[in-house]
Length: 319
Image 1 (tube, rainbow, N blue to C red):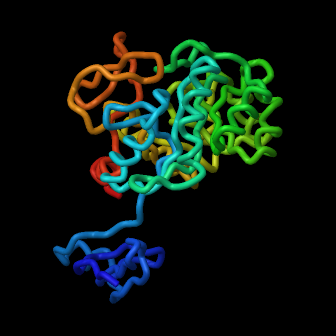
Image 2 (image 1 turned 120 degrees about the vertical axis):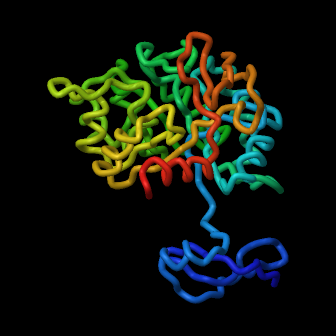
């Protein structure tokens, strides 16, 4: 077995000062070390080894977008693996059925067997097209009510692990129970729905909220909206910690309110690339000043990687 250099290893039970030992396939075979506390880890001057990241909302990177099909997902997986992501959900855009079919067909082999290099594709996050036309964000306007036949056809190509929908769109809430029975997790997002509609969707089986605060009805003390439903009732919700999508104060509020708040990148093809134009589904987006935007200035995903997300949380929240 090949040991790593001495490091501070973060394990489920706390920090160890020691080494990883890997087998000939590069897999962790053993962890050797002495328990230390966080203060000792900070004072040690040694590098820290952390568990790999899992990104449940990731559109692209390295100049490639999941919706492009072909070998795009492999290039994306390799880029994000270099930043500590070990597995991810390939996230699609609101699009015509033929575009989604192309993307799912390309993803199918990677979902069935891990690629030889790069982060593992765990399945698909279907972000739309079952969203509100009033809360598109950077999604193109190919929205439509959810149809079980369409979803089943895509799911047969590559497994849908997570599906984002707006429950106020006619017919969408009625399908949540059936989608959960198919093994999918349903999240509320890109929604203009009310607080009451959000709570009702959670009772039907929805488990969380997609990029909390962004592209959803906001919190007002007389109209709590989807943000209010999330803060009052959600067990899970995504957060994009690129310091552009969400103010640190809002992050703190969510952290106090939601037990299993988790971070995603919502990264686009522009991640890991220089400033300039890139594709996000059928739309052109521009990377500039550390963000990605449509021509009208709307935020359009991010250039975030999970290691940068962790650094931002430490910087903004002192975690």
